[in-house]
Image (cartoon, rainbow, N blue to C red; front, side):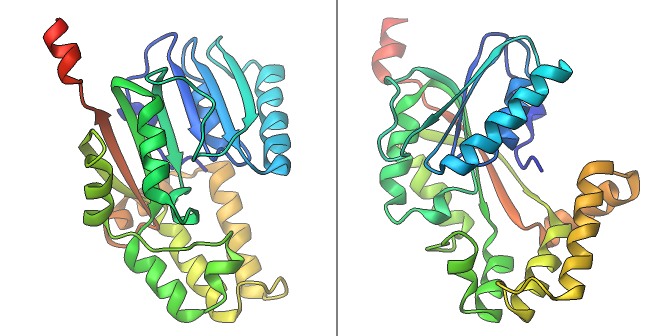
Length: 245
């Protein structure tokens, strides 16, 4: 399930794309499909990195890539092992809600992005997430440890304060919102709830098959109840660089 819309990002051949908190590699794999891109995924969870490696190797076997290369590394978003301004595009999807020092993470993310490069950030949308927290006090801990809920205006303010400008946003995954409400209602740690399991089977089928009717329904409902907020920002060109030109 890819949250970021790569069609909006105008990825050029040879781009270095960094997927922060890559998890099992869904966005790293999408980046690897871009023409001659270098797709780099970083995460602290070794099990997730192994899953991402297996996913990328499958892309290699099937020839489903853009002819570039991929790499994975264990790295902390608060201390990324990359030089200043060394990355053309940064993806940070469903990560910031897990980090207490998220402003420090934002500074580090923007540090490695080159001037003029794009940054795509997604977080759980405020009001669907708020309902999850109200339905189940255990939800925040059971779902990977969400330490905060972001409001769109405040997150955009925190990001733009560090040298990027917002140029687009949208909401995604509306069909997933009722699933999380239902899961929180019965208990987020339960695995024996038939209604939750049935809905999960539907979502898995939808992701694999992507029928037109559910794609249309998802797009129709996203503005109202999309589970994720997706922001697209561009790093500002530094004054010194403008003067040099």
